[in-house]
Length: 341
Ligand SMILES: Cc1cc2nc3c(=O)[nH]c(=O)nc-3n(C[C@H](O)[C@H](O)[C@H](O)COP(=O)(O)O)c2cc1C
Image (tube, rainbow, N blue to C red; front, side, top):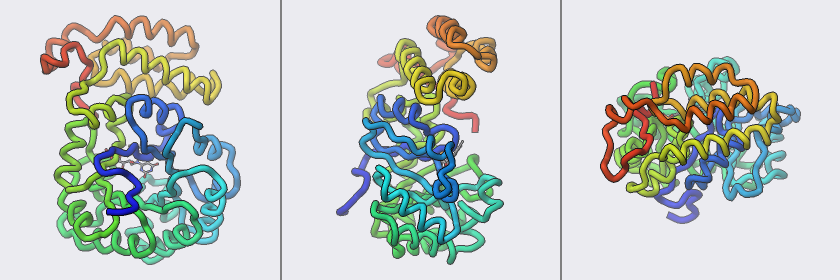
């Protein structure tokens, strides 16, 4: 297929509100992620130059490929947003048609836009496609778990409106982020569209990523929660023999990521927002509960340094005993459970 945005076989880092900021993307990129997105950006906030939004869309010069994702519905605002984006440095413009969050649903945007006002959603997408100078793509959810027809039909309309790629999250809007991913529906979309289809949902580990792309028949998959606290998922996807991180690698990456958050946001904000990031790194890797609990009180850089001394002592001995280790990957911090969901 010509004009593919993503070479077949590559994994893409999904937009994740509150997570895929510049420090997280750089962390993922250190471990093999090339294709990544900003978190969703409200079209109106972009047009009105909201300060926080401007921070969300900062791109590091080292970022080779970066997509921006917009959420919105007002035609005039979307047109202006596309024009602003034309003057910025992004690789693709993705339209969010899959978000089920109440604050987005309340405005009739994201997944709600597709379900309640499909014609207007296509019209909104067409406006972006018409005014954008960079390729425009869309990310949506499946619309029925038994019958592929509604999802195929809507995705086809996006293709006809100029989408260069459609990403399908194989869950229904009402499922939010839990429950099965309906690979068969994604597969039908893949079979019926001429543009590439990216599969999404449930790629919480490299093994689950392989299941997602194999079962859906897609050449590319999008990794979302599986990348939180686990940038190594990208190297594990690219190389089935690359294992999870060693303790040394984990500690090193936690430090790099933490100081990059400080550089980006300044110390005060960074200390507050880095807690969730630190917890993600520790989750499922056998670190004592007290250590994880202490992260909530982290309020100085010195406290972070003290925490790292504890992290470097490693997980509890019981973790090593309970972990099913591949002998070739001994002493690697595989997650006992990829994600609680
Ligand atoms: C905390 C969180 C924030 C998210 N933010 C966005 C977003 O900004 N834009 C978007 O299209 N999807 C967003 N998603 C959805 C993910 O991109 C992805 O579609 C979903 O998590 C399913 O993939 P997974 O099962 O591999 O996590 C978000 C999901 C979570 C859990």
